[in-house]
Image (tube, rainbow, N blue to C red):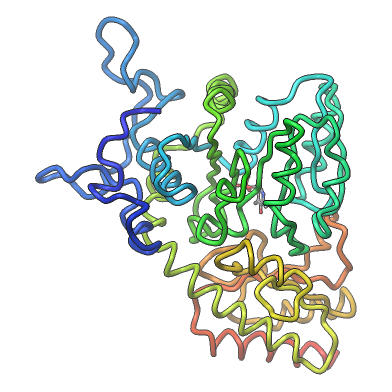
Length: 388
Ligand SMILES: *Cc1c(COP(=O)(O)O)cnc(C)c1O
């Protein structure tokens, strides 16, 4: 890891609350007449006299703007731990690919969820093309437990996107580690304020920073946080040879956005729960899923391992046509993919063809609008769309 002096600009991340940690995460020690968060460093190369040691040589390998962001994410994913390293990437998929393809070799076995992010089936095909055996099982019911025998790596996505099932990270990680299997958790939906996979026993927390972590729908970014130095060296090497690096502007925007992470997540989570309750109590049966809903099948487990339940609510309308009318009738919620932003979005997930969901399945991402306005908009559109 690079020089870790000045973590948190003089605070110990483990000694403060989460909001304080978020606003100060990764800041360098104050320097007179310099900004609090130094601006993005645009550099393909750095002055490099003599031997090519030193922290910054070439822009594909290292960048000071990444360093600040990597420290910040590390403080949120694993507060107070100095044995953890974070690497940022151009996107969530760049981070996921870097981890999987740097750790797995021909003949290895990987266990993936069967209901995870929609690009995972493409990843699976690529892993198989390289001679890696891939086994899959659903997230719910900890079904991946039965597939661990002889596996090199277990990939967990909880809550799963878009189905919002939850699995027991501690239980899966314990079983996996007993058999020498590495454990990675996709922490995109929860964010490090919703759950901290390393504390639950995982070796890696991997996420798309494109979603709620940055929260404004204007940046693609990804990261891997891990505690095994040798494994992280391989991830770093993969970043260097593939070159899927974050732009300095994106890294800086992401870091700036972290300062509001707790406010955004708290606000969006509180509104998501209200909307999930209203949808559950709606006269039509909508099969609402939200891990924070006391009646959700995932809730008992989610309440043990999550500290916040996130901003995504899913539900199912009776038909594709009804779902399309619902989306058309919304005024404050954009029909768009992705999730986690301060502006609410919703989509009929079946339009992509990749997820095993009914035609009328809606994934709603609750933003930071006034809760009453959003509630009126969503319930109003439900009503309007029912008069087909
Ligand atoms: C969006 C997403 C990804 C991929 O992230 P990108 O930044 O779009 O590459 C991976 N996992 C989950 C759960 C996601 O929602």
